[in-house]
Length: 261
Image (cartoon, rainbow, N blue to C red; front, top):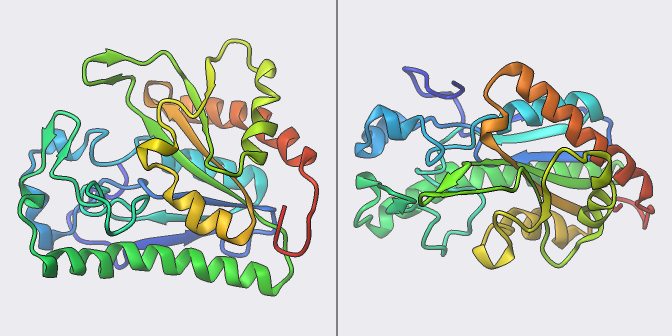
């Protein structure tokens, strides 16, 4: 389980394959369930700290597998989303959630403004700064970019089973999502849906907007049901399936200028 070490990692964010020459930049905001020692476990037991509430199981592994296939840079958070959800702006009520699905988060109850600012400064800002640095380097080199954010979701939410297996999400810019959905027939055994199990109205497209749309990058958020990611073999199989959608989708996108696809 990534990030559940006895000691804190030296940083809040990691940049993997920083010299990747591929067109894609992959973000994994919920890569880790690590809760830094200064937060005293947020008052949670081990079951909650390892659950989908604390991270997106399999999302980091998928990010790395797709990175290898595309020679893509990956920016991943090293801190649990229960400390700070890097796919939410500071003003969002669920950036530091007091409850996640059925789980109460004691360490997030009645946070002072100073405590909130500390988490913004030590978790969220470093993640955003790392993305900005990668984007700036790509733009300076005149390299086209598409943005992919990688997530997983629980098969049962508030007691209700979810039939969707792969969600392809977008906000105002649907270019990459449309191009991927046009290839869904290549995976007839999978239930693939647009803006499911979440969509823009749920506030999940923050990263797409501030790291993708603002630069004119074609962008997409991928959600994979986590019961399909239980083993390394599952993760590799799913990465192959996602590449079945991603590869032809990238080929259909037209270059629109330096730093854009």
